[in-house]
Length: 418
Ligand SMILES: NC(=O)C1=CN([C@@H]2O[C@H](COP(=O)(O)OP(=O)(O)OC[C@H]3O[C@@H](n4cnc5c(N)ncnc54)[C@H](OP(=O)(O)O)[C@@H]3O)[C@@H](O)[C@H]2O)C=CC1
Ligand SMILES: CC(C)=CCC[C@@H](C)[C@H]1CC=C2C3=C(CC[C@@]21C)[C@@]1(C)CC[C@H](O)C(C)(C)[C@@H]1CC3
Image (cartoon, rainbow, N blue to C red):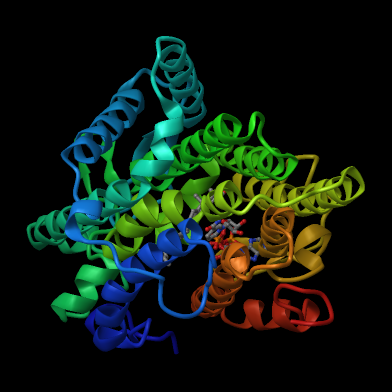
């Protein structure tokens, strides 16, 4: 029998207590990382050297800059798109429409920043504002999640996510009640997932690179690598923007504090940790080591892109010649599961590629500190947890066919290990 959905569904993240703890723990971790990367010892574990006062956190300039950034990204979202894609079928059998113009937003942002810099915009001053910017981003995430929670109170039941309707306000505030909150064509979750945070991440990286050039004459090789790898990752996400429409964040999870904070605060301010670390803790990196790290990133990217594209192509059109020859298992839903190609190697080959890239992003920072490896550690925990959630959902969706898939492809993420 399928597990229940709605108020009787099993609670995730340790239920209301776990959600309450995460509401505090996630912002606290982000500030700890920002302070640690800025400090001499750069300790991941242990208390920061000193705690900032309110004057270090609050800055009207940072608030203005942050609101201007959100406004710019919202305006770019509303520009005419090269394509309008349809999302997955919803409970009421309708499909939402989404503009595909994320890559265009990245390019236009780059052009505007380029113009600004040539007109004297001090991009190298941004690293000094990271703390107050992270503070206003966190405040925005709390206020915005409150708005989303209230908006969900008046949304029809069919618009609610299966997980966020436990009835416990803290849990539902954290996980999100409404699946696709929108005002007219403006989809809040889709906008936040790919625009202000992801593009903000590469802009922060670039500012750190500029600042390093100002301080030391030129950016280090390690800084170039981190910038290049992460720009490739963000550019790839925006180029393949349509693929996000089938991820569990869009199709299953509600839009609450977890995703709102994750998208607009956690991603830009913690995913740029390696570049933040390198600015204060320069690391020597020779060409042979740099080449080996590039190779690791290329292997990770090859697996990540290959696996994601294979599944997306198959889900869009199983008779596409690129996937038509692959072996499949039929399921009672009428959909099929791939059992050869990337998806016959492990059950989440895309996670494997992503983790290999995460390793390549940390290696340029050397091995003297644990701090730049935070992303790899956090990401491993996130993907292991995400994989378990996805398995539960697939078992519920596909039943015996999923069990057969697990028998034929026994490893989850790493062949012969996990
Ligand atoms: N950088 C970051 O912080 C993060 C990055 N990611 C990345 O996002 C990407 C998307 O991840 P995510 O949304 O978690 O999940 P996936 O893209 O792995 O999607 C899982 C879904 O794929 C379908 N599926 C699973 N197995 C098969 C199969 N054998 N054949 C066909 N379809 C299958 C199922 O959905 P259905 O059958 O309904 O189509 C399943 O629910 C990944 O590359 C991940 O690494 C994710 C989280 C955070
Ligand atoms: C700890 C915490 C705050 C959890 C929230 C998790 C979010 C940070 C992540 C959940 C899924 C994500 C995805 C991406 C970024 C991180 C979040 C939002 C993603 C946009 C990164 C780029 C990838 O190519 C992607 C598009 C596949 C990916 C989608 C999932």
